[in-house]
Image: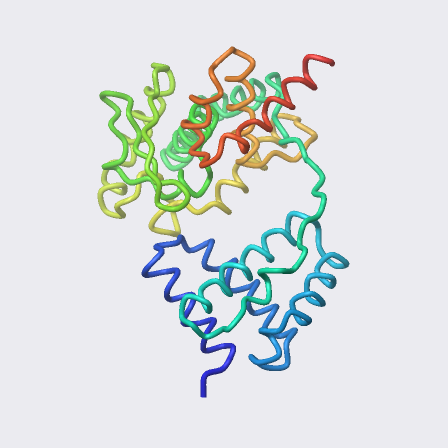
Length: 292
């Protein structure tokens, strides 16, 4: 018998193999659809307008607007798939009023003096390294932080980099972003290139063996949690009293470019944003800085 769970699994396979969505998107879809599945008694109850309306009302009571927006988008996409498969006579979400106000949260950036303090600690630790192992860790950490701040990479993009994606002779980096979209970034700063070359040369055998550019002691490649832990540790050593995340380097990169007068279309392309409206939020950050 075809149940709600059957159609959800079929849809996730469709998203994975036909739409080629990435793992994080598939995981989010699975969580959102499982939540709706648990809310409904069975498949026939779940495809009614009344069920969708009550579910959305409950979401607004429990979750933040951004989370609600994502879950609604997941459900809409799922029901469009059911329509495509001709399993529905009418999409219950097509006529639901799901518009709502979402508070605009400005992206959090890292003050430039904090970035300087952060990098100073990194390079000081490298000079003080008392073992080959510690030197290697410092070289890797410097390469990661310099690359994050110089390119605005997402943490997932950085962890997925392969040796063939990085041409340190020309300074070109091939990035595979959200939705399998590719973009090329250029590193023109010789100090950053030098940091990446020093790291690569130190870990050449390990990089060749695992197939990823940034390696980890316990995993084939470095994972985002390891990068977050590393950033948190150096922030404390630098005496920075605010929580710093890898994504804040991305926000700082974009804001700094905008302050330097770089065209927003170039920034959009470097960040890999599909829509210019996503990039435009950084104009609000610079406006706030101008007032300050």
